[in-house]
Length: 115
Length: 113
Image (cartoon, rainbow over all chains, first blue to last red):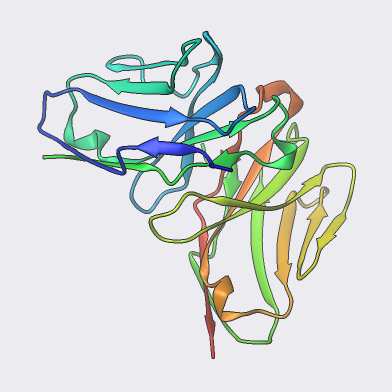
């Protein structure tokens, strides 16, 4: 029973390059969330998606960041023209419904380092 | 605007004693609260939650208390074990926020022998 799978675990990008972070939710989960954790901070909500739909992107920076959750395949968080301030741990979570009371299941995260 | 605050960045407790982790919030619209535990290089793991209509919820060694009038919640771990050493995050959510959780900055718990 695989959990939430994120890859890669570590990603190094030079300033100006693109970063693509992938997330495969748990089997049977159709709700996906992306959170970012900057050093010494808590997790900050970025975006909530269901298959083929963005439900809430209120936490996404206005430029350079985008997310998708296609009908087939993993959810992708894409960061274009990365800058040093994008260095962080990016966590994906999934749930079987939209109620977070029972806790989502998080993946192990992708640690992005921009050099 | 930090709506969920964990004012103690770290806590050290002896094995077998009680660990009490605290969390304060400012938004009265939150409907439920959760605690997550996180080990280094891993994702957060859900521990326990409480609805705003309750003042206590218990699951084994973990109990969460909610004081709505004070906008304060706490997680009690009894007895504390070395494997409990981790960072604990308080989080809050509401039916009006489409499953979005607001997290605190975390408290690092160290359980010593």
